Length: 534
Image 1: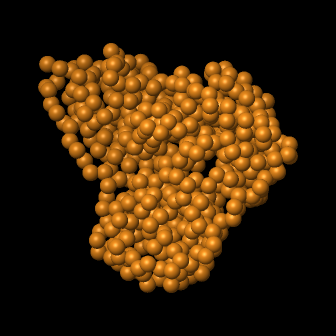
Image 2: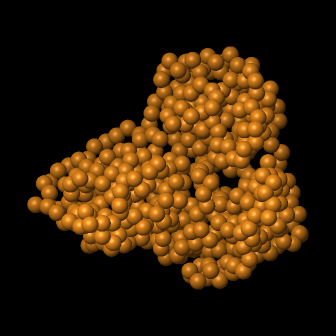
Image 3: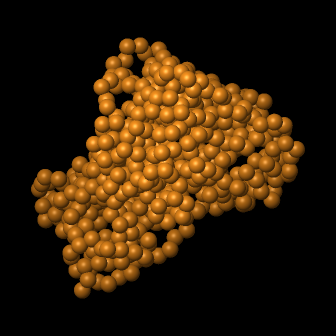
């Protein structure tokens, strides 16, 4: 008779789940022993990096990835990036070893006490099998739950003595649907209201990127001929930012965001919450007399929207269904809504954020992947980098630092693995962000991932200083970061590191890093001059 492990790994092969990202511990070694040669194991040095790397791989390959962390202690380390994976809607199967069943009642060292509760509410499903023989079926359910919309991470707690138990040869493999289609009657109602609107406006969110609806979104927008905004804090680019109808990204505060819809009688939100707000600035969600329609694949996002009428659907399926019902409008956009990027001062020392962004952009090839975890320079990045291709930009949906650095490594591994594009990954990092998951640099070096970390160093948490000004909270401690040698840290993990101070030096250093195989770090001093948060 075969073992639980034999049957489980056969199922994982059928599901295509042959990549495991982990940081091994004693309770996981029985799962990993005699590791199959047809599986890939990606090692990271800390569980936050484990989850972030797996998230990047899963998004890059558009398929689930198995995450293996060390019992409850590892889950604690991993939770920050699990929060981001949940809000990124990334399908991950997170596993953690559990103590031996015979000792669980005693709660010995490394017992994951109340294991299924620990990751909630940031996983879609959490389970510890009652019997060893249930493990294969639990993986099948985990796979289905992770992929079904809204996609997201799930968790399995697996006792370490289950793997070698004998079990019958069973096949629990099955196929599942991964998209939610729209209610035809609701689509017809939305089409009627859109056609009757005097001056509609569109807001696109990251679900368009996840559902591969880039071209459908363009066709919808061009049929209506109206401005297109990107939803606030969008973790993926949903619409070409060079398109004449693109108006930019919406501000993430109630009053300022609502003001952007002035003069429009209908707001059409597709693939986004209504809305991600932070900080609190009061005002109307939408102007008085303005109606709002929301399309989302997440019933929770539909139910908690403060205004508007909702439809639960995959973004691409909705756009395909409604397109034949729309009346072609004469475009209201006579000229590009966004001005060309401003020409920055390339001579100032230290460089301002817009100059650094322009210098990095000048070094990028035609095809690249951009990852951002530098919150204080997002406005300058959005001005200088105009993303005009799908699956090019990624960031964290949660607002919690520590995801982007390992995710950039995972995206680079996905590019190398089977995407066929082999694009370099450029990760824009603040010097504060760089410290959160710096262990990911080890994996990048060891895996020879083609990723360039551009670290902007101003020796402070600039974004928090901007918040302090907005919230009128002076003299907050802990916002300065003196005494960190970023080049030495990078070299300690085995990555080539360069200090670049001028615009020309930045462009040259980033270009050289892109041309070099493997991972590199470019450190750029950044001015401490800040702009207003809103």
